[in-house]
Length: 96
Image 1 (cartoon, rainbow, N blue to C red):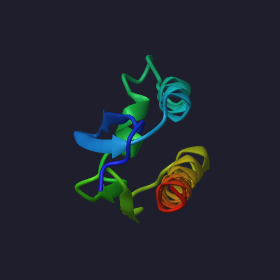
Image 2 (cartoon, rainbow, N blue to C red; image 1 turned 135 degrees about the vertical axis):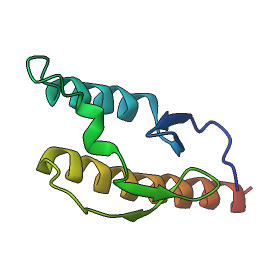
Image 3 (cartoon, rainbow, N blue to C red; image 1 turned 180 degrees about the horizontal axis):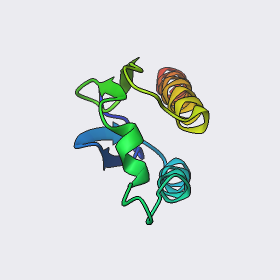
Image 4 (cartoon, helix red, strand yellow; image 1 turned 30 degrees about the vertical axis):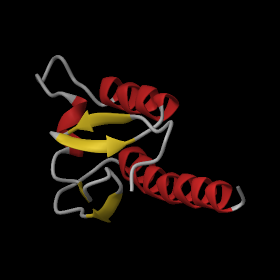
């Protein structure tokens, strides 16, 4: 179910349901955890960190490698926010 007014962006080659504000914070985290001296991009920490469904909702967070706490907490909060937006939109549609 695609929700009206929801944004989809690509993170780690996956279409993800994310607001502009959340995507800006994702970019901030990527910049924060990038190390130009070691040639490390912060986006590497998001690689294989989560799985999404066909609507771009995170359905699984998997930490098979060391991930900074800030990135892990952001991903968990994004998953929760997606569900809350879905419930809110569903409730609004049902009340019409």
